[in-house]
Image (spheres, rainbow, N blue to C red):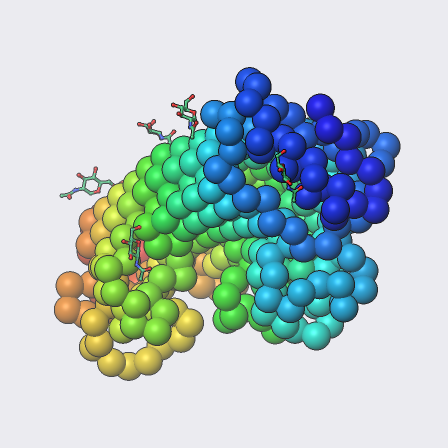
Length: 364
Ligand SMILES: *[C@@H]1O[C@H](CO)[C@@H](O)[C@H](O)[C@H]1NC(C)=O
Ligand SMILES: *[C@@H]1O[C@H](CO)[C@@H](O)[C@H](O)[C@H]1NC(C)=O
Ligand SMILES: *[C@@H]1O[C@H](CO)[C@@H](O)[C@H](O)[C@H]1NC(C)=O
Ligand SMILES: *[C@@H]1O[C@H](CO)[C@@H](O)[C@H](O)[C@H]1NC(C)=O
Ligand SMILES: *[C@@H]1O[C@H](CO)[C@@H](O)[C@H](O)[C@H]1NC(C)=O
Ligand SMILES: *[C@@H]1O[C@H](CO)[C@@H](O)[C@H](O)[C@H]1NC(C)=O
Ligand SMILES: *[C@@H]1O[C@H](CO)[C@@H](O)[C@H](O)[C@H]1NC(C)=O
């Protein structure tokens, strides 16, 4: 069990190399408790010799506080081609991102996992990272649980967890509070969780999200990207606290493909600006009947709590077919401002609603 000392990129490289080339059963790279490891951007590359690899984060990991030590383009902790990688423990991983927020640069994610099937992330805390916290690409069967992810309210684009081109993913029992600044609301994100292209069969439950932009499918179809597919995304038993949006699907005009079989079930809201939002005109309405990503088979079941804007439900779809088979059932959203009413806005939406407050005019 190699032990890494502070300060430590070279030591990490050697320890990773030793762990990845160890033949034994589930070799472990241990970051011992009571230590802080100062790490410059680093790549952890597989494939490894053992069928599974373990990184135990009991100590803390910090990014460089000096801008010059960050490579402009680099992901901070970059994992590639490592199958059956488990990273767990109760340590804290903090990128010292505030030096970046001030210069508004578009930073790559703090922790990036590409081609890491069977990834397990559990237990640790991620905080104040330069941009997105966790990004996965082609990580089938990933299980992400018991993480705490936080960034201050003012930080731009600090998405919590992005999932791209991955199938069979579970995310549960995480607390995610990311950025919520109005200044950045139409940039790439600030979502607690976002599900991106090529993602299917994802179950998300017991998430506490806020502040931030909620749990989003998308955005998808930017710059006319074609062949977008996101399906079978199921979010349940989650709460949104002081978020800008809650349950959200956002697609750009000009893209093509589909989003289908999406459900949000048993959702609690506390002062959410727009709790339910489907927007085929993201980031804003361009009045054109261009090609678009089809949205169908979406349900919102058991959504309760308060909204801060007068329009609590926004379902904004595009011709010719609009969004189809959209269901709302047992939805009760009231104004966070006692005595005020909330309403729903909809265009080109087809489906049904039952026991829904406010009433959705298109759905009868
Ligand atoms: C990685 O480990 C292998 C085998 O133990 C060794 O030959 C190689 O020099 C090491 N590379 C680095 C960068 O430490
Ligand atoms: C990952 O684990 C699964 C299940 O234990 C196993 O079938 C697979 O071969 C492992 N992957 C690698 C690359 O060893
Ligand atoms: C998600 O939940 C559905 C329904 O319970 C189940 O069939 C599916 O296997 C689950 N997927 C994952 C990745 O756990
Ligand atoms: C997830 O959180 C819920 C609600 O707090 C709890 O009932 C459940 O046991 C937790 N699941 C795990 C696997 O920790
Ligand atoms: C979307 O994801 C699918 C499935 O992984 C992939 O084949 C396709 O190339 C992706 N499209 C874009 C525009 O990235
Ligand atoms: C509508 O969507 C639901 C899932 O939300 C699905 O079970 C049902 O089969 C769909 N109905 C039609 C007519 O496609
Ligand atoms: C909706 O929730 C409010 C606030 O909790 C409650 O007073 C009201 O009776 C509920 N309406 C329905 C139709 O359940």
